[in-house]
Image 1 (cartoon, rainbow, N blue to C red):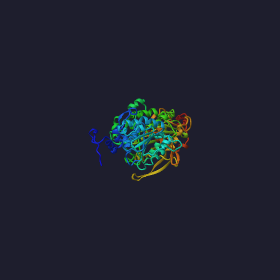
Image 2 (image 1 turned 90 degrees about the vertical axis):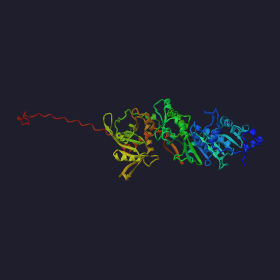
Image 3 (image 1 turned 135 degrees about the vertical axis):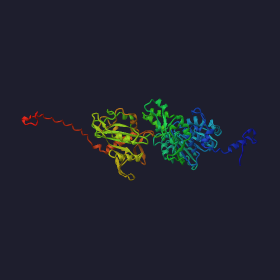
Image 4 (image 1 turned 90 degrees about the horizontal axis):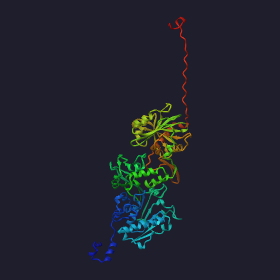
Length: 610
């Protein structure tokens, strides 16, 4: 039976009480969370920078996360987020939807009781009062800060440090905000997240769990939840120039590090990773509206435990220049850099064992100018890192005790330039001439081109491939047969990158007068120094064991020069520099003096007559 309620009460033939009964019995509209919020959610002027009617078009990336809440396939949503992208309002919209569309017992958990009370008073209760759809269901006279009452449901507002509140009620909907700030245990009880999830067992088939947080460290709750999700989705946006989809990555935010921070704030732009087109802040809104949530393979399929990940570059309130400026002001302080990595890039901060910075490299200037070979050098080696459209290279001089000096590095554009740089002579201040003895070239990208080049220059060039896992030895030689090209026995070395990164870091911290030091030339540039120190050694848990591995400090960090130095160090080790000793060139022999002989005349029996 279908009841039709007249639009105008004045013309209704039904009594008021019956009309109200029909309103209660009428099923709610079939809306998604985003559709409901666009119609009925109102933002408070006290807590929002843009008060008034909610519009998902302002933050289009939240649409997919909110609508996943009504997807019957999904039981748990993990939102790995930075600050300033609307993550908390996304959670609030889901709670409001439950109140208006599907009343069921719910819980919202915050890091502590104080924050829970503050949020209840200043965000959640005002949200219920501002929206007519929520106000008519809210029962403020029966509510307390820690427990809001509605028609057909209650919502418990708890702090993760209060075990009694966490474990007291059965709930169908569980919302957990800023989970990385939760205590490890709730009093004498277990992990508060586990306690809260236990409360959902009463609803085994239709429960929903939403947890969101800015990450802290790799072992933090949100990062572990993100890594264990059945699918990890990132928000892909199309380039306004070529249309290719990509994620916003800080590595593609381009700016001149030598400029003033405020100049950087106004001048920075984004570079498309496909066409290299310049993307301005004005392009961002249209890109966000056309964006899609995808996994790394391009699939948009959602699963039972779905993870969503964003960084602050997506925020409509943040410019590309703001991100660049924040990095420049944070990079010199570990504490501030940690905040940038966590709160802006939404990445975990590593528990570092070895951490170097660019200042340490610049302190190692040797007193030699660029291109000058230091005295008592035994040999030169080179390293080349191959990229899509360029080559990074280094040339390093080696002397006794594996003391080494960078004499040249830079960026090249063609293979011909690589050949030229590695084959010209380099001289000492006295004019002694040296050539590169061996150059190791990365074959991880454009492999066939690298093999071709090394085959043609086999007397001084070898192909290498870095290993991300430890090898039984520092490097391992393989022979490649390219039957189609009639080439056999091409040398390929698998190099233990971790070993040679340890080698570089250990020598960087040596005193300047110690044998075995690692040096750069006078006036070494900052970009090189930052790339050489772009990684750090961290502890990771693998199974029951903890291992030390090298990882980039942040996802944006270029480490090309570090790779070139790893290859140059391998080349020196491969040639046996550990066992070589410097032999001074022999002193030139003095020319013998010529004896003067008197000439005899022909009268004396000589050969001349004059």
